[in-house]
Image 1 (cartoon, rainbow, N blue to C red):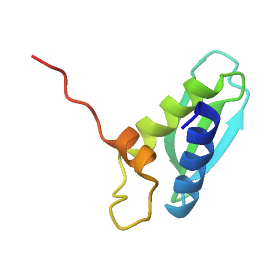
Image 2 (tube, one colour; image 1 turned 90 degrees about the horizontal axis):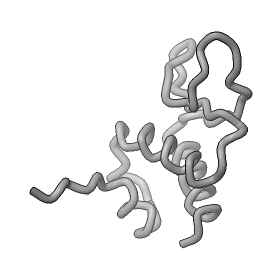
Image 3 (cartoon, rainbow, N blue to C red; image 1 turned 60 degrees about the vertical axis):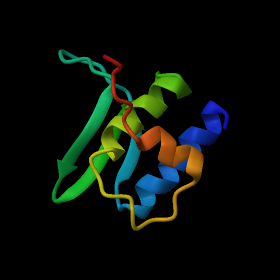
Length: 89
């Protein structure tokens, strides 16, 4: 699965979880790449719109891993991405 396909699949998953995803300019005193937040009771993932797709995928993965997705139909490749890998050691 290509990165753009991963991004689109994660955006669909976020929608199924009622998590709004938006791409905004991140500027000002606090510059960040984005992440999960809650605004007026609604979960949102805000991502710096200047980021490239691989970085966007990582931010979405970090956010969506916090939700229970077992009850949803998720593509196997995306399910694998959502499963955190354990460090060997």
